[in-house]
Image 1: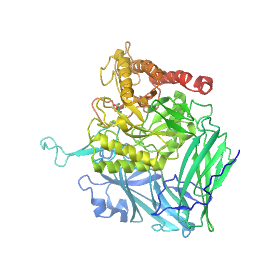
Image 2: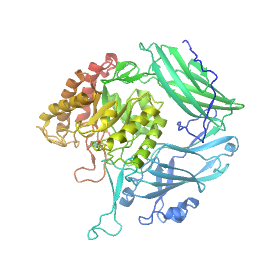
Image 3: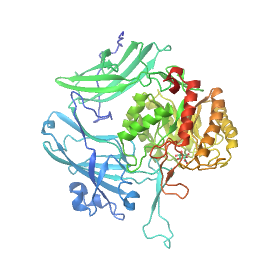
Image 4: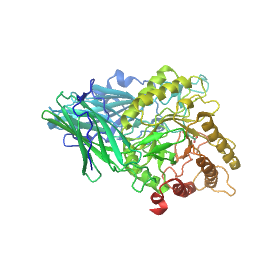
Length: 632
Ligand code: GCB
């Protein structure tokens, strides 16, 4: 393959100014070591009415078992809620404490830097190493990292302590509030409840892997990659910029582009450059090509005097564009066939678990889907890796679910979360759209300046992807849609409205989708529709909560979707939800939200078979024929 160098060979190396700025996924390489701190940690909750005791009494300087009467083992990663038989722990709102010890090899002393990285912890987190605070983080779904080189003891035992608080307030993303009822006849003194504007369990804990990893003193701190293809897809271009930390001005950066067999496709150097080459193996979404999800490896080599660092980033080469009626990948129009999901499972709650990830991607392929939305928060990097590899397009959503008032302080936190999300996922080919939230009260006048700022900020950070916000207010009252590239809307015709009247679905769906497009002249897709069903409940004719009703309802939507698709502006259908998922206790929910195609433990309901058939037929109509399930 021909290699084309750009003109910016010798541009000055980018040296990060104020400490680590990157959040690259930790990896082993010729120059890096990686230790997992996952396992069973020690855990304690704070006394309900003395929430600050751990801070006042400096629990992080002591052993938890010496300061708390009730110390129990707790798996990491996992939510803590469903691990014990204790309802107080399940429903706990406030500060909990985690602790574990670990050894650090003596050979790490000296020339290495050491970092501690959490994939996520929900929500407010403070971390100490050997009693010294090393970092804190707000937000439940994104990674954070601290350099701990100076706080560690080398060649001996170390202790990490984490204080974590799951309380949601009007200023957190997502919002919540603590409510103290004032009727003392009915509630004991100090009684309160946590309320929030969403229906999924606000699982809490250290949810994603915890890693300790090393880098050399000078190291590759961050990489940003964008790709494009020529109109005929004959040329592919990869642009990259690399941020180096601790590097001298003479440091050199080299890049090799490797294909999936490890063969070198092109090489280049410099901190900011481009690689252009002929006949790229493109990253295609599932169903649009027989070989979806092709990934290259960008091997980065830093040489700073006698210090060397190596980092390998998986990248997909694809173009992405949009206009008023569609989204295009590699210059071909995309039709989304997928669902909203949740990170949710029995016992572990929202904790990362590879067996569930692999199972879910098997089911995604079995269904013949090409996409999902990370409703209603960013999913684990381990899940996103599978989306990249499998050619599953992702609408990557921030945890801005159900926002109902829009002040400057909230905006600040929203923008921070957006920044962290884009920072984490900017290089992923699977991410084809940013979603800046779900179902806000976007009819309020304050929603207009608020969302215009979130969209502008998002576009400033990443102009290469379209931005959406998932809407539930009517097209006639919504104030956020003018700022968006794509209109996503959620509706539950014949479920939450006109319950039982399946005959109304088509009319209501067609009217509403057309009105969104006519008013705003943007591509439109449906990001939620569906009905609850309890596996094993049946009736003919169908009634609500039966599997029969759920599938009958889906079929009415399908008829509407087919009409809309032919009108050119309607770009996708995502059912709610992939699987049943845990909710807070509510009298109208039988332990979970039951709108899944699969049960919570991934058994197919009738709806799963109906969807599989639908997506196979859709593929024949919109996908690449030889990539459709029936032809594989
Ligand atoms: C919605 C929400 C989703 C809920 C769903 C439901 O509109 O976006 O989070 O789970 O409705 O089942 O009520």
